[in-house]
Image 1 (cartoon, rainbow, N blue to C red):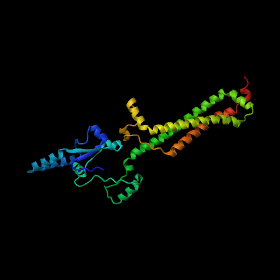
Image 2 (image 1 turned 60 degrees about the vertical axis):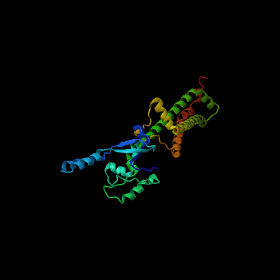
Image 3 (image 1 turned 135 degrees about the vertical axis):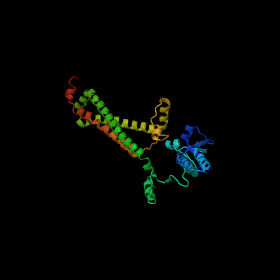
Image 4 (image 1 turned 90 degrees about the horizontal axis):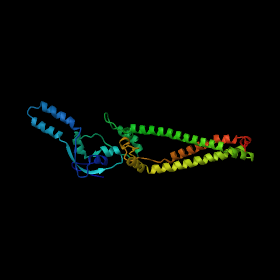
Length: 296
């Protein structure tokens, strides 16, 4: 908690870095709210007869910028807030924008972010047009739509990656089947039935799928854990920005591991890779031992 007094301000860490500002420095602020006051003063000056000096003094007061003392620097982790926001006492903001005793708006914070819609409906009952209430979801609607679209695209990308991996396992086992024709023929000649032959190749595909799934899970969890360090390493070493702060408005890469989603992905990948072994296993089981051992 920081109590601002007098002509003081606190600003975001990215904005302070951009302006090369430190605590205790003076900051000159130009407000777009002065434009309306300037136009009003010019009209008064045009219509004034004996009050030119008073109107000119008012105009000079309006044009002069506000000089604030930097009392602190904050960091929220949200790039938009850290790079574009500065906080001032309420009376300073009213003076800069020419609001008098008015306000642009009031922000309400709830204990549960997802109860914002219910709180919005309750507040809206006491407001009359043009006043309105909006939630953080409404304010970031386009951003959430973009995230939802990215999640959908990522789902299909992951699905096709798993399918390609399954075809890789299937082609590998088909190659093994061709290379092991002699061994398969010997097994069938010794009395191995179709189910036993199928289980040999199905077991091989299952082991490959299980190993790949566990390896991918371990690498994925490691990458998530050290995602920010990896991003910084790419940016500093290879000059590759995989998560531009200016685009995503976050200073670091946010991530949340949902166990249910991880379980669904791992089980699905393992199941698809195991099914890919059925086709080569079927061909191996249908192999004629006489033809397999003809030239042996």
